[in-house]
Length: 119
View 1 (cartoon, rainbow, N blue to C red):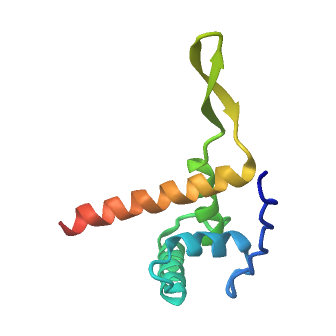
View 2 (cartoon, rainbow, N blue to C red; view 1 turned 135 degrees about the vertical axis):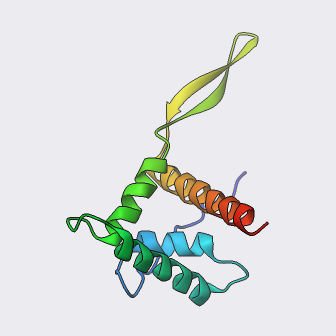
């Protein structure tokens, strides 16, 4: 018998934008428990976006959210066994999983870009 499902802990919103998605991103960005360093890195990046953006109708946070939504997958393939064969069946993704996959992909891509810049 399996144990009961773990309860989802509520995330506190960040102090600057009052947004839970920012906190979720920073939690994935953080290394070795250094959350304040991760927040500083994120806020510095948002400030750079604010300086470089051309149109004034979107905030820097909205530009970041648009980029995150562009990375989000909408469908993933799952293995499905029919008869003796295994097929890859496209299935829609839960919204929570979409966000977590997009955050992970964005952070790994940024790490690879930075690694290539410095080496």
